[in-house]
Length: 360
Image 1 (cartoon, rainbow, N blue to C red):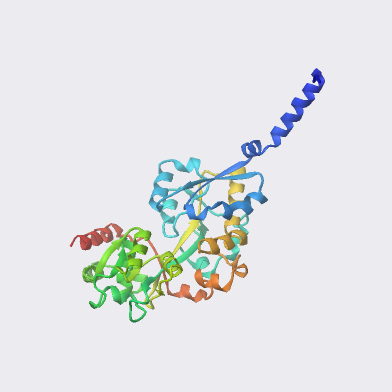
Image 2: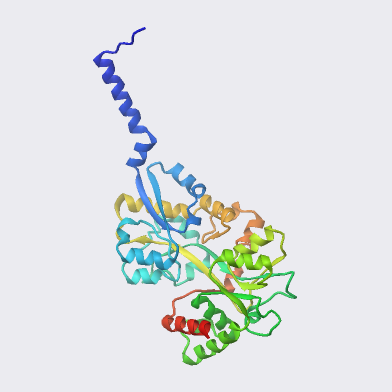
């Protein structure tokens, strides 16, 4: 049977096809407002963001992943701010961006979940200037002492890295001047208010302590996967570490411990910050995303998938007690022992001191 179509029917078919095309996912995406987010890969997993995309059909997210905070800062200073709408700088790094006029203040009228920030973040002067917030705390955690409980007699504190020979050659420290010198300062009992502005005499004491530490170390680690393998083999029994090796190795059946020294624990926090040039509909879309990232749907995903804690309490009641323990929000008094990283005015001298110790 022959198929015939006249010109009017043809035009109707073409018009219908055009209408369907206009509604297709591809064309919807082309018409959407695209937010370009420069961040860490582990924060932008598709399942973390799906609820936002489902609720905001007119917004898409383009993700660019970073390897270091310094890399992110360098990209923005080199003109990358024109093509980036949202970044994720460390809380201690925000001041560099502000000094370079790279950021605009957070609009809390549009980021209502910001009212749910934990008190420690509300009261912190970091990320702020002249009463305005330029980097709103996003997610946080601690860098503890992780150890093989089956290979150590008792829970360690910072002194294990500086005193005695019992674990000589089986200890590890991260190769990072800022944290390494902070740990030495906590061990020596240098007050927090003096830690980042230490004078020559204090830095001389730091150097002496670090020289003693070096003789006890198996290695300075850079890769967390390498450190995890050293723990698994028993070559390292105790290290200043990130949290993941503790859970990774426990899952393999090893008897692991996590210590939070009474002298203080290094706390870290990353923020959400908006480049200065973002405006109009794009800016509205960015603040919608920021509000979502501080909200309950994202917070629950992050708590399970990270596991990391948001800086707000928005998802707190949605998280199991076990998961609360994992992300340190069961007892928020832990924050009282935090020493938040800051930028020492003499940091170049800190780095020189650190490198001198390593080369000795």
